[in-house]
Length: 159
Length: 467
Image 1 (tube, helix red, strand yellow):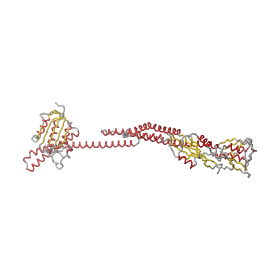
Image 2: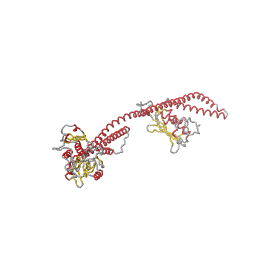
Image 3: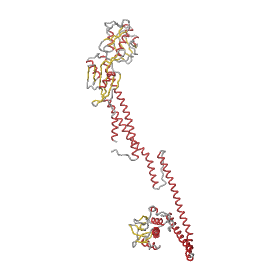
Image 4: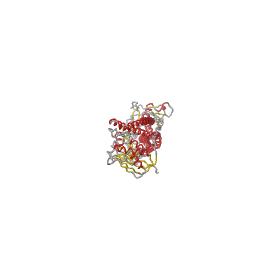
């Protein structure tokens, strides 16, 4: 009778944490990269990615600063006007990346806005973010374009 | 508690069964719920830890140089926390003992997925998390970077939570115990009360109280049983009453018949006596018929007298007339009156006084000695002696004795030892009447066989207070 009780107690106490086999725990983390991808415009007037070998991915803000400083010595050009202070504030929420640009809407062409959106979204995806993310580019002066939630034509959500 | 103990009573068996069922049920329920809860707890804990590790790596990964140098590997290791190993090709950064198992490492290399494994080391439960760090292209394709992170996370807090739940489950099962005992006692009482009532009724019935009945309660099996027992008692009572009535009728019939026969018989006796007196002058064959008629009439008279005597015993109207009797003298008088003294050896003390019914003593001795003379063989012996507070009269003969199958029936009425010899002078009631007389005195007669052959009848009568 005593042994039976002991067995019951052991059974109750013995169901703690026991060793297990190897179990899948989900997607591995990501975010390392040999450099950052910036988007410029080629001679045919199309967006073209350019890998800037910074030896690390860096943040969206850093990528945009690099973008605003221009393509350097290359066949590509930028459709964003030069700015003395190429500093961009980035606020990421669950649905949208909000960029506060040191530019007015007149200083950027629509292709230039795509340059900014694609560069920001590219860093977001490479950091492990979702490709369905929207980007909102806000300009220094009030404009209707500031409230548009954009996607990059080169980074499609499908594939 | 040696394990050999078994509950005997219905109550203890019920209680033990009830308690076992309840406690094992409560225990099983508590155990299974604690088991599933602890499994959920472990799973969610593991998931949370894996997500934390993923988040920690993802937070610093964009800032790491790639391909990493030793400094980058160290930074990643510090970001993930203690008990972590970070490797990249030949580079490695370790903190604390490397608990990584070979199978975990193999799973990380081949699967390129984040994997976890629970192990126990140094008496503590650990969750091992192993993951490669991936490079994601702008188009979303992922390739391994070659950086691998292995970290061990302490599961003690989860284990403590689980132990707490197990203790609570055991406590729940334990709390069910007194409740189960209480319920079992109540259930046992409700079952046992009708059983006890039934037992009392059965005892009263066995003791002769034919009117004893139990009141059935409810409509369960025990109530059915009670009704059945009541019906049984009813039918037994009815048949016993019928039997008693029939017995009384039969006895009354015998008494009436013998009484009715007495008057014509006394006339017949008178006629036969006259016939006997004139027999000397008859022809030889006529005289023989007359003598036969006289003998048979005397036999008939004796039979009717014996029947009336038996009827009186049956009716309970036989009365004792106690007086001071010298048993030795009474026995000799009895034998002398029947002219048996020369056929019987008598061994009596000089005087043996007792308080008895003289007439009934005479009947007893006469019937026993007459029986011995008729069925046994001489020498017939009568021995009278005082044994304790009793008078013992022993009648023995030297014949073949009583056959074994006769012995139990020797005092039955009209029992004939030899079916072929029905025409004996006795009525067939002698020994029965002797036994009834002895019993009326509070004594009795026993019949046995002597070791050397011959039957032995021993009468024992209480001597009563003397003088």
